[in-house]
Length: 95
Image (cartoon, rainbow, N blue to C red):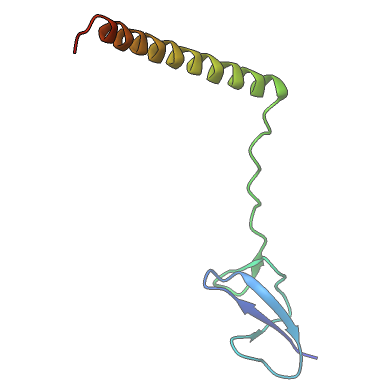
């Protein structure tokens, strides 16, 4: 029984069908597996799967949290200083 495949716009195999006739955009092909890319010469290659980014270690995550905590602490000090200045100005009757 003939074998048919469907390619997406990037020539990637997205469907395989075995039957007596092609349906829709199917093309007859004895090769080509799901996810493979059809080359101009009709051969198929399996694309390289990109490696996943390294998972951060607990130590890395802890260091990041400490850095964020320090940044928030500094921002808090700046805000508290600004509020103290506003409060002093109000108490002195200034504008």
